[in-house]
Image 1 (spheres, rainbow, N blue to C red):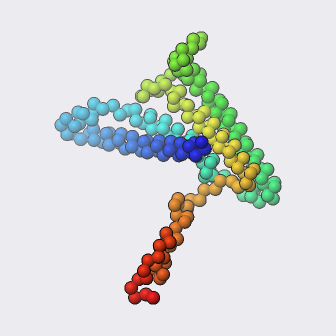
Image 2: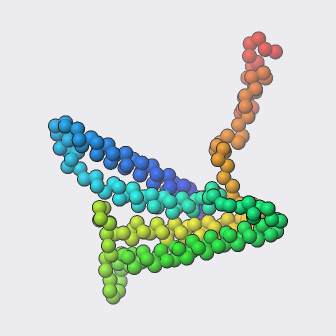
Image 3: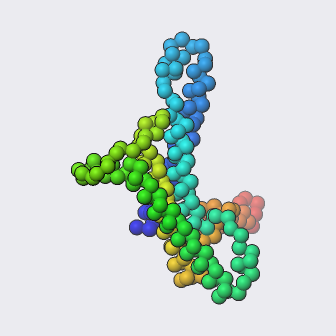
Length: 220
């Protein structure tokens, strides 16, 4: 289950980055190509409405930032000032680290709860009521986005979802730190798949996989 959540988190961020890049590229090409005086092509490009791309990309980057922040907690890539904390004795340092992690969990939990309340009032309540046939008083559909004309609660859902996930990651890191005494650390120079690679020795002809090749000609 945890591996699925980890991969879902990574794929969501990667997909949003890739999709936003493609949409922005298409919007820029459309903007400049529409000015080319090419018969039929210019008319067809001008008939396309691409005004929604900027709004969609803004919301996509918001989702990417919220879930990317949770990914950052899990992998330890967030920047922090820990010179004073690391100078303390191990037991004292551990207490401050746990307090800091729990403080992060409390903060993101509060943000997630407030965000859910906002999303509920801004349109999620109406969506749930219409989906399941509930008859609630003072039920309104809520505002929609200017260009896409989608309910804004869909976009704002990134706040409670991303914040709750970040809160869970803080608790996960806290439990791991209490159990092992280690915090997640990101190595910028690390390349996945390169840990077990042994360089080829041309003198003896030993392959990284352990296959012994015949010595090169002229070498003993």
